[in-house]
Length: 97
Image 1 (cartoon, one colour):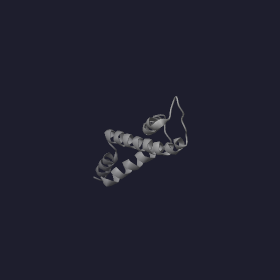
Image 2 (spheres, helix red, strand yellow):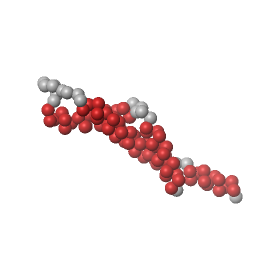
Image 3 (cartoon, one colour):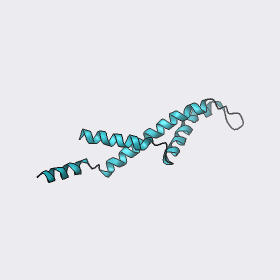
Image 4 (cartoon, one colour):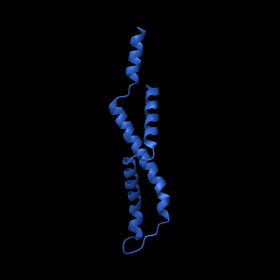
């Protein structure tokens, strides 16, 4: 009887592959958002001059550029935040169950 209980507990503790995929996607989005915020100060002091840059349009689109750069960084391996966040999310879900 105890062996059956342990087996049932072990099965319940095994995360569903779809759940892991959702957690990974959310963690990647979190890391991309974090990186985007970290990149923002790097570009605040960068001046751009005509004819290839500057103006209100560049200031408007710079946030989109930073978001795209951050997403590419995450796809290339990021800085390690994704794995840590994903593990904590899965632990929290496991503890809630």
